[in-house]
Length: 305
Image 1 (cartoon, rainbow, N blue to C red):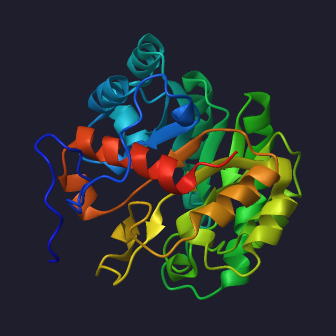
Image 2: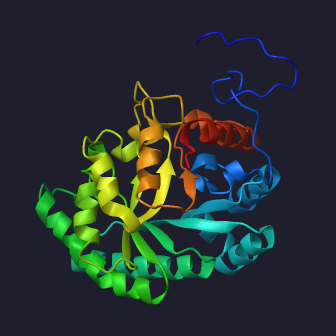
């Protein structure tokens, strides 16, 4: 572990690094964080009630809600909680897992996704993030799995559109192709999304999953109004044994956020920007300090326009 510079008593430190903060923490009402959203994954070990309170203290205007935490509270109670806190819901995470080959499994996946669409509508968000699913156990048939995604989206898209919700297909880094997402590039996600009305199906641009793609800026421009959400976190090395937890604090890794943020802005996206971090050290830190660090890093590395 490297030494850090000494700092004055009470000075802000970035977590989990313990480095002196480069910027003062933006506070409630700061226009620089008007589009900032805290995705609940960043504070994974606290529930929705606690996350809402953390957002209130920090002046965070929006939150990305996860369904497991939503179900702990209950939909009606969550709607009241968020309304009373004045928080808008940027996205609901997540729907998807549409690649099962068995009829019963496919029917159950469609049922659960319709429920997720209903939950998103009740929460007042127009965006349901879709992680489409990996290969079924024992299968090596990627084309077949991808076609089942297209077929399932075709069944779900009209249902979503009728309720004012858009399915935001999220390409995941290719290392997750077997177990989490058979869509690996923004181009692949757009190839599916463009088969459906704009208001029914869009895409998720997540820096962690797309930064490596030499086509990413061109595909962001192609996406245009289909960008349903923009999510940020950094790619850090060495990768941990559990690669799901490789998503780091912005500025700690290898992603050029400026170029991607400028491309997303140029494509016309003006919605919320979610910070979604999966990292054991971040999860273990004090949530208020995590959010303070995230706000500083967002202003320093991500904010454009």
